[in-house]
Length: 138
Image 1 (cartoon, rainbow, N blue to C red):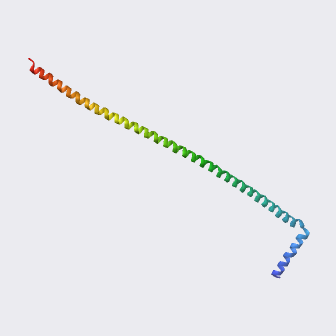
Image 2: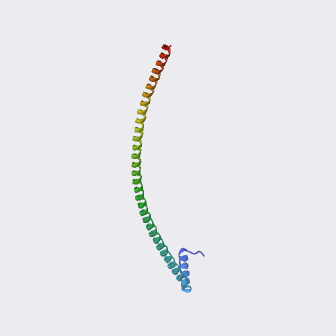
Image 3: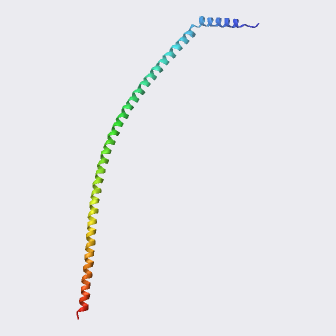
């Protein structure tokens, strides 16, 4: 004897009715289980929401911290620029001093050249006079 689809559906209904009549706790367990799962899901969602809020707060704090660091770097850069300007002024002063020293060396070199020429000329003149005197004096 072969069962039709209608017979199978009717058997399923009858089995379901018998189970619910004799064992109502099975249906209650399913409902309880679903309620527990929903409660857990709600707790997990609340936890995730709290985590998201904490992360957002952390990101906001990081943004503020980065702004503070940017301000500090800007002040450091400004300070460094003023220091470099001061160093440039000092180098200009040093360059002026070197130019003055170069001028002094040039004047000193010119004086030494004149002194050497005068000394050489004087030595030659005195030497010529001595040679002439020795030659003409008996």
